[in-house]
Image 1 (tube, rainbow, N blue to C red):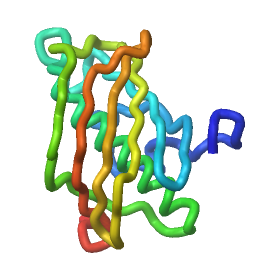
Image 2 (image 1 turned 90 degrees about the horizontal axis):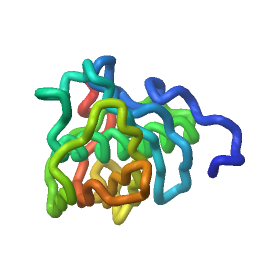
Image 3 (image 1 turned 60 degrees about the horizontal axis):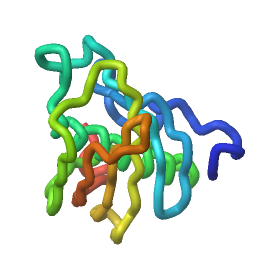
Image 4 (image 1 turned 45 degrees about the horizontal axis):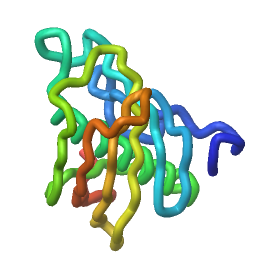
Amino acid sequence: MSADSPPFPEIGDLVPHATPMLALERLVEWEPDRARALACLRPDHPLMRRGSADACVAIELITQTVAAYLGMLSFRRGEPVHVGLVVACRKLELLRARIEPGELLTIDVRRVRSGDHVGVFEGEARDAAGLVVAVGNFTLVYGAQFDV
């Protein structure tokens, strides 16, 4: 499902995160093995410190995009969206130090492999100029057993 597909559900319906922590604006692309979302950290977002955010915040943005990917997968199956947990980060490259408030980032994730309740995902965050801000590889566990 790409940009010319029907609109996706609201991001809050796909990602089991509440405001103010939800940083994704919307899901813009989804396919069975990948997704793309737009993220923007507002100046009052809890991850902002001293006027900007450390680039390591990209971990949260990438894993929220994984959550949106999984939420859309559940939505397409007619299942409820479930909570997931990051259990490992095998790789993280930060190509700059800070993320500025209001900066629009494009987040791409790709499912590397997965089972019923665990998956490995690669992700990257790019700025409006297309420059890579961060790249990472994450393992998540997810499913009804983690719902609170």
